[in-house]
Image 1 (cartoon, rainbow, N blue to C red):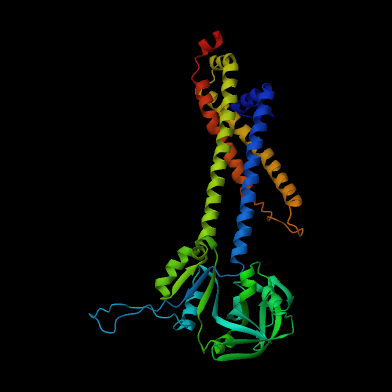
Image 2: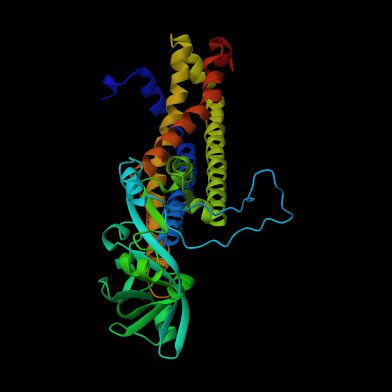
Length: 405
């Protein structure tokens, strides 16, 4: 086999075998560093995915709404002492049907759904509760908010006399599937609606306030015949929501709010978490590089006579340089393979043993092939860069001086 290998590879492998204890120790160090990187990266990816999923479970990526009404003087040039901001009424988006068709043709948008939303009172006997009505078209809306996945009782049937409510509201009103509930909004009342489903979106305020009814029922209650208060969108890249919202705002003439803007504190926390993870990975990679470099420097010093003999026998500076670069690359690659296996094993153990009180998973297990490829490339590149200084030193050795000693 060695007959077909380039000289540089034969020499590099022989040097690694002869200094097997040093090689073993440095590969162990590289493996631990890569295991830490793989474990942390996958854990933080799963954590971010879980947090983002929880935040977006009850809201769209982008919401289009009518712009706020602004008070203006009655006549131009006349300045009033006080211009009060008008009360923001429940208003419909102008020409929303045409706007819906334009949005559906946008390649960045995955799903579009019209919504009629407003405030009302939920009444059952003597009990009342302030709620937020959300009138929806189930087929399109459930592509944005996966309400059926969070149903704890009943079904997601939404005919003209049906309503779906949250677990906290059901508990407060003492109501269950099949019971009747009345909604009152201003001077209008819905009549008795049948509770067909009870959901739990993982948020107490949402479960207390939100009730879902058919779009036409909400339009009648809110005196929005044929109108909608918002258009909700889902896009392919959730982290591009703010960019897409800024693009849609002048195009549609409506106010566009992304989930990033409405959850600014959460998004800042995610960014800070990602930054801290990147800094930790950089320091781990730096420690791996220093370890590889230190071992190869010692190897160059120990093998000065061997290098001198090789140089005297006709080995070029370029070949000598490549011998040590190959050693660095091999140490990094082998360490990456072993470290990736250790990191993946640690993740599996963590996922199986660290659970929530009810036994469900605390953090989703996210093991992507790209993570292991990136770890291998990072370790190999780090090994090559770390070997550069020792390799240059070896290549510059004078054969006569090295042999003498």
